[in-house]
Amino acid sequence: MPFRKTVFVLLLLAVSGFSVADADEKELSPRVLQKLHAKIDADVNGKVSLDELMTFFQDTRKSSIAKDLKYMIAELDSDKDGKISLNEVRQSDGADGDDESKKAWEERKFKAADGNGDGLLDESELGGFYVAEGNDKVLELSAQQTLDEKDSDKDGFLSFDELNANIPKEDQRPEEFELVDKDGNGKIDLKELLVWESGQFYAHANIEKFMRLADTNGDQHVTVEELHAAHEKGGNPAEIYFEEMAEHHEL
Image (tube, rainbow, N blue to C red; front, side):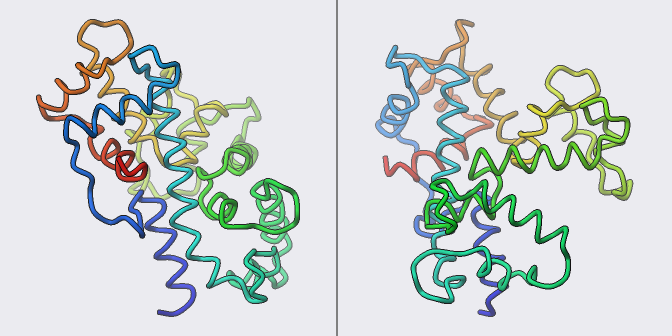
């Protein structure tokens, strides 16, 4: 497979949540659900909050991205030192030409992804460079870049029209904007823009919907019994994400 096609396929798999190494779906049996609930329950109080579930899901996604994109090391690593330099990145994507703005952006993103500051990206860092949600600093950098570029009235927010500037009408998605605009004020702030940039707004919306469905006593938490009941009832809008978390953690 040609180099750039290989990179594209790996990136597509990582963004979609599909694991290269573990392609089979994990059956959500009662035992698996119980073990998964225990892992998500960070404060070990026997109940899972929305914050705990969302944090666990996001951490799983980051780990999954790093795991899937480690296969890119062999493709990019021209000097075979087991790590990727900024020059190797530029050689692979054609950014080593005269486009100074692209080169400056890649350098900023590279530094954000380079967690230990050694000027190289190892297996754990490479995923965050190529998929923004895989690294908090890269995600924040990407969101701020979008805000700076599109905030035409400089009020620190993005309206639907600002976010979709220069995007054809048929490609604009008002329903996606509504999912991200949590307070419904018609504008997206930097915190909301992080969800937009991550591309996981549908996942977040479905996880929130699951919590509302499963939380039968309205205490803003889900017990393992409520988790079992919601799964048995069927129609869990977040089932695919539970399967992904169970598979990744080998439950």
